Length: 608
Image (tube, rainbow, N blue to C red; front, top):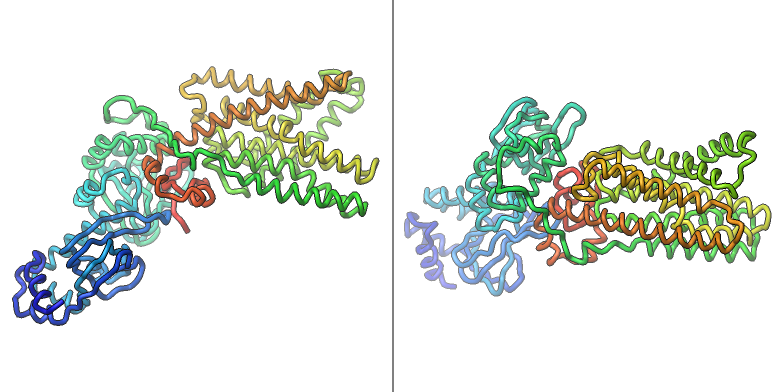
């Protein structure tokens, strides 16, 4: 490209009007013309750059990574656009990636020439400052994914009425008892929300002030900057306009209010057009289908159990028998718990389940054994046996009680917000109990019949354990949660509280009865087998119904908190989405890779 062509381009560019022609000619002689092929990067996000580019021919795509590592399309720019000026004006790393769409020809301005233009033309300098401000706020609003359903062109308009506020460490943004008419989003740094009971960290992507704007009530917490930070601030009228115009965002904020301050729901002052209809569930099969980690567990533990069983039969070694006893006791329970957890969309780390599993094994099993020996198999209970329904009924009551106590003791009430939480934690408690019980029975038979007797007991119990303690305790925990444990429980829609309590009691009665019938000693062996088959079928049906309802509830809340997820799923690798989960730093929830806000506590999710 000749120097005269470069001069002509610069002379006709609206940003450079007012710059003397002699300076433009000097600039034109030093500017480099660079050609890019399709897909080649002009700018790379995170890198340090000392130049910017005027796009002469072709188009470029501007993109950036959001908090969860997904690429966001910020803009598509054509001839005449200037890219890379943010890094030069603010002297910082690139905030976005610029990629050629097809063949692109650009003029490269180094820092010295860029500063010369800025000094020579007040119009150029002011235009750059205004453009950079809007682009930076737009990128941060897009990164603050609470606004992700807003079309990009309209989000740019929102960026024009959003201001940036710098706050110093120790500065109080909102004091408890104060009333504000602004909505705040954290774009950089760290803040702390301190209330009566707890302190919560607010990081990039988090926001606050919505409760005050929606209900006109004073703040219940004090928001303080714990380090130098930056906030995006929006006025009340703009905030309410967005909620009134974009129904998915409106529903999202109402759900956030329900999560953070359910007692304020009735105090919402603004009518957004009637009662909100439920958010349509995400229908994408990649999200709706359960994970299949349990197959890997079964293959590893089951395969190991088979190999160890064969060795134990041939070698008849006492230490090897103990290893087989432990593995055989764990294979069924661990596989079952993993299977139930795979159906949970919004769960916790595996360590949390392991704690429940181990707690039930260490506490529930010994305590139940002790209570049964004291109350049922002592002197007063010597006349009872399992051929009388009274004894298995007492056993069922004792064992269900101690296993539920483990769940109550080891899981904080606020953590169990969904029906699936209760099902999963209940399954873990029940299977921890079942694992110890299997090991005890196997140990008893090992002493009586060597390896063969122990292995037969372990194999039978490994196959039957999913239909026993695990299923019963999962159903019982779900019933307990529906009736008592959570005021926010919504597994059966608008069912009244009295109906929930009645349904919960019915579930508990059914589970206690099933356990008692399972332990009952029938006179006829085939009657016993038939009853076990019936009980297994009932277990499967009840668990299926509870898991289905629980999954639907989780997907409903997830869809409300992440209204853009349907579009996100179309561009996400299903394998990446189901295998890579995001950990919420606020409550510890593991959310699908496609999510951006935690459906349990409302905090922004981010990759570490």
